[in-house]
Length: 77
Image (cartoon, rainbow, N blue to C red):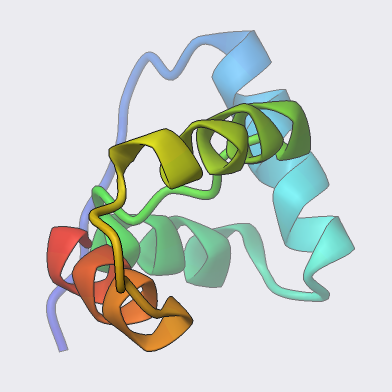
């Protein structure tokens, strides 16, 4: 298995990684790997999710179902 070393990580980034790892009951290394693997699938803060959800009805065509929205959401990620 390959390894990676990250030098000169800003302290605030390290603190955030450590906090996320503790919250998810993982090592910092496993948390970093999860973040790398999920890449653009980053989790949005709840207020941003709600703001985007609020705009959905205006963006949908008549007859759009929840399933259509879920499929489109998965394709976007």
